[in-house]
Length: 272
Image (cartoon, rainbow, N blue to C red):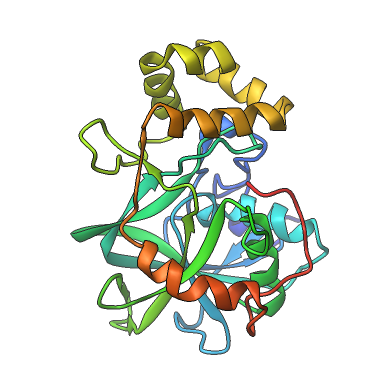
């Protein structure tokens, strides 16, 4: 007999494919609603706020249950992880100014006053937070991301039960974000259209990564040095701008590097 909760499996929900395995599908499939990620299942939640955990706003593949599961499995962490759908005012999902070693160009938030997005808050315990921090390169002096707490005046995060969180953490890219040609940060459109446009607009990028999104992903996944070269090229071609959140990073990054509670980690998976 089929298990009663079989319809809550990631496979049944269409959430089983991780972007790290399918880079052209970045940021991966997100849940339709809030849920508790428990192994390979997304179960109903009994509450939306978890005061004993750290609220982290997911703007990219950290909102993909399959990606989160893969990150946790790498360190043998099996504890359930609440994922809560939220309505966020003041942020937009931009394009990180670096090429990931997983074969894609990932997302990073930028300040967009008045803009409203439906995103996910993932509520992390200490072990889970250390894993996600390490995967984003937070503990490394030259890692791609830093974790920053934004107050509700900058990123108003409202939940379905009427709660507005007083603050929420986000990962912002230390390289900056890509602009749209006018100097304003560009919105991440999904991996295939993003790579199509980036390759079309740069002969130097095509020389490094090929002419198609498929070639880009294959070459990036095979060569970490090439990813670093692509990251430098974004800056050399003056495609990079600020996210408008750097002042919060500057104020907080020092405490992260010195190991404040909940921020330090000895874990060291490859930075994305």
